[in-house]
Length: 162
Image (cartoon, rainbow, N blue to C red; front, side):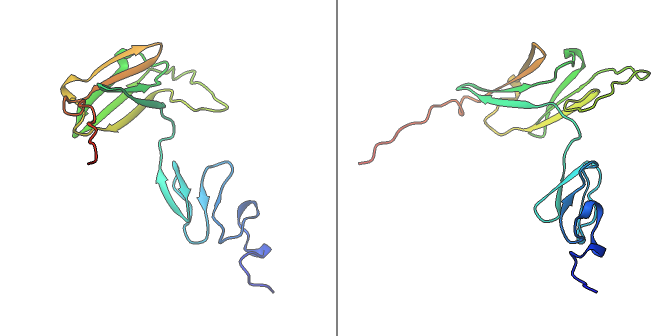
């Protein structure tokens, strides 16, 4: 009898060898002989290391202008009254909630956006004037303006080489 880990007796689900790192095609779980199964909501990368990622979250873009950073949060379907923005510990916290009919919850064949809640946290540095942050909503997109401090707005100075 062949004791090689790739023989048919040592194969795991869906025919993968016990030592191979594989992703279960339906559950999102990963496994292998040395790392075991990742807990729900985790994905693996590399050789058995894992990271936690939110199940569903809103996408965002951050643009930079001369005087500010603009954070575009694509929180479609979330009313501005249900969105909370706070600044603390050099982090910008953006979260939102919305009611969902519990008797008739939505049924998706594929879901890429949150239904009830979302939360995003963005690290801030000393170039942001935290006291002057503003927010507005336009066409379902939340736009948070992070003004730069006056020191950060100073244009780069070119120095000639002699």
